[in-house]
Length: 471
Image (tube, rainbow, N blue to C red; front, side):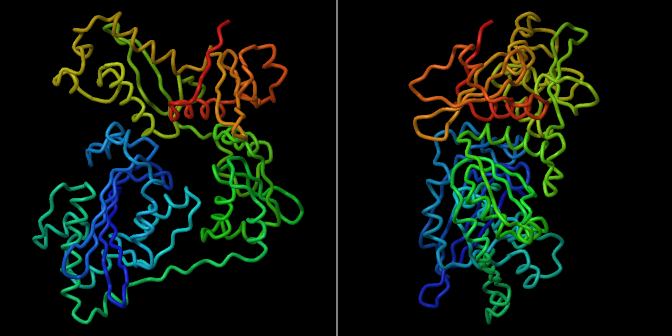
């Protein structure tokens, strides 16, 4: 459930004040979601007394099925505030409050995740309205927000948008409060999330760390590396390891003796070095990350009508895709963008199954390649641009990214599709001469994982500087 609903209770002078909050997210992999919209309606027990509604730029792709569900697209969010710009308001409105959520475990995690990315520890008491509804209104067939309010005759508009769902939740919570005459059920359902006390030894390790981007190494008492990771904020990430309650976090907490790190400045370099170091050291708590990090690829073929087709499918055996993806969802998200950017046919890109024309043709967004109407050469030339732009096979380029200091930049060198290595240089220094670059470079191992990391990073970071090198 990507649409998340929060009810935040603020206690002022022993009187509970409710702030009903609904959040829309990007979807995606666990712990990689981002918030796209948030609405907060503050309620004094009688009426709404304050409100805060905002779209949020999640700085990450929105899954296509979520766009269809909510109507919120990346284009809509291009000029909206990022989470750090609305975070202060959220902290202020929830301070000393109880967070009430429809499916509290999931919802509360999303909000905490956004604050974790900022290095801020966000902790509140919480209450689950799913559990509350089951106790106060038993024997219903479903307790999802939509079906619940419909069964109770509560009006709802703008379904799957933050403001509409938050208003419906307000009415639902008012009904729940009226049914709990003595407020004993609500009181009993409130959970206090314990503030996890970090051991002095672990707190001392955290205090010695940097908040910069880089790769970190967790060592045991014998100096062996037991875990390797990367983060945009090393101190914050280690704090999560040391306060986490997952089985892996608890094992790390028991065995850790020290933490070392290497600042990279660039997230791309952190990703590349993390992958390389895990393969080299094989830490015992990195077992899952030793495997290949991509599963799906972009392939092309010529159909019987002479049109170049693109498709996303699972990589098998020695197949060599144009570019690679961590999962099929990210592949399809990429393909949707290419269809829109290059006016391609949904059917010929594997996004629309039909024996006749695609949906884009019916709304005049497809030129008719699916029904053999569009000029083959013109259509294929657009597909060839996508293949050329995303292929690694013969590319020679320098990828310029952030450095470890304000006046420094990093550079990753790819020569004829092979990753050569990286270096750092001062902003006043131009790094286009290959002979000079070859002398400065620190080698990086070329493998499919590293290639995937670079291709994925370039796709996700449109502002990154990529310098093409001519033969």
